Length: 423
Image (cartoon, rainbow, N blue to C red; front, side):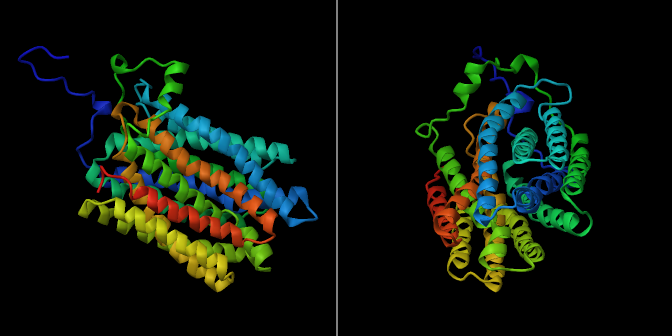
């Protein structure tokens, strides 16, 4: 409330809409941090974890190994649903002199790395599940805070480009991690340990960047009821947030279905004797197109001031790639599909992230709200393998897996088209 004749008080710096463009040093350390994060998260998902589970079980029926991997991923999804908004809300309210986000980025990195090292020494399925769940909690802690720095420090007109540097490292991190653990290290313990060390090394430079502290006088009261109540964002009051969230959930489920079981697809559907080597080749093709799409199309969306059309086309393109895998299951077609999938997903990752920052209901709760958005990215990646495993167990093939992936991608495109407040 203001008195007559006085100007309204400016919002606190920590929650004001940023107007100053971030420079190359900020963007480069941000990108390097995400390179370490994606390497640490996706190398286990693509190779280390399924191979470790298969070696532990030695099943008579290969579908048992697929189902165990899916079940562990599903359990991790439950932890992600809890950890993302909770830790995002905590970072919103952190009044440390080091800033709101940096302490949580560091804590999350240490938890993530420690759990990965322990995972390498797991000796049974229960231990594998427990350490992977803890690793995903660490992943949530650090990425909830790191994602929020986009809304905290990057102006709207630069967010498509900066979000591209969140997205492009995903592809690079995956292929780099796969090459490192297959070419230079033997056994799961060494593989997990090296990506844990690289995670810490790659995140540390970003922690030297400034982070605006939150004035303790502006901090809202933190209690369980308040946090739980804040997790519900009414789609009736905030429809664009709801449609963006739904679109992200559907597209990411489709992407997880299309990529999460690729090693098994090569091994058991195509009977590929060089499955691990060809997985690296597929990932390399995917990587090139993700990088091109994320950086070029992310910046283009900034320049023309449009997000929705980019996200719509990117989502639909992933559906086309999944249909190719479903109905023409061969290694050459998988290469073509990897290119389409990378082009669509790279564009989606960059532009949808920028779109999400423009539909947030409250600038004071960016960490929590983006934490909810991040659930729509991380949980599908966790439950996708479970859904895919169930489809494989039901049908004995991967056709239904890729058909479901296509349907999710097309439905996600339709949801994003309903957004109205962002062009």
